Image (cartoon, rainbow, N blue to C red; front, top):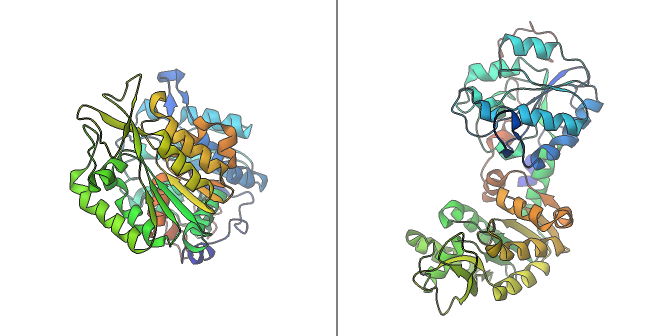
Length: 425
């Protein structure tokens, strides 16, 4: 089971880090604002999430080497995706200097890292500036491994990717462990699979059924009589279409109608309620300043798009959510970037926050919605996952390469032969 995998991982608390170079893979893939020298971090949620691990290592006198990807550079330097703004924000949050080399690996980086003293911090440049990161190139993994005596993976959000810093390095460094954030993520998500208190309500939103079909099927398999699957967002349109409703000009996936019917049939066979919108806020465009309420039985007019759930749907969704003992939410209920179509998502966010049961929220849009709902709503959630894609794959039952790579194994030869000082081997 999921919990057994977690118990088989090395212990962060037992990792020897005193005066040793510790490479910490984090997920600082944060949104930026501005351009050039005026670039800044627009949302530091992911940076803050890693702070407990980083502070714990600094308190144990580690020589900290942090690495992350940012955006999607194509294996080459892109000044707009430099880690500079991240280093600046991290320095503020840690209240200490953060050194940033001008390349990912190389002689200059090696010297900078080896000169790092206990309690000091270096943040490597964007890992994806090197083509070997995404291709899991063994030589690049060895270059990263030579920079450390111990390795910590605290990047749950990147652990569904078999990239060099995620799966290559831990196989080359004997002393490795999951970070505190990684452990929290795994324990929280394992509770959704192994220790579910019922009724369990799973809320899935977003644009396309095709993006989340596997997780919809996996969730239904884990639900029992009395549980509920709540479906919102544009993906609900295809479910409504599968039930014979007219959706006008709304986004639908006609080729997925059969899949929706399969989900509905599986839920019905398990006596699981599936809640779909009974009314919708509609308009002729995403940027419309006004909306029209449409009953789903009557159907959406041919020129209009369904862009948010309506008030009757909000009431039904909220009452089901607040009565649950376990809630998992991934995906918005509509185009919440436009205030006209944000209320459905805000109602769900407030309902999840008000639920007295165990609540988990995952996915960038859902986290953004929580932030929009206010600090109190955000703080009321038991666990806010930093990894949308990774959390969905975990719930689907897929093996996460970055987690599997942390299992205790004999490390491969890094090719350094101890010439970098104490390598912990």
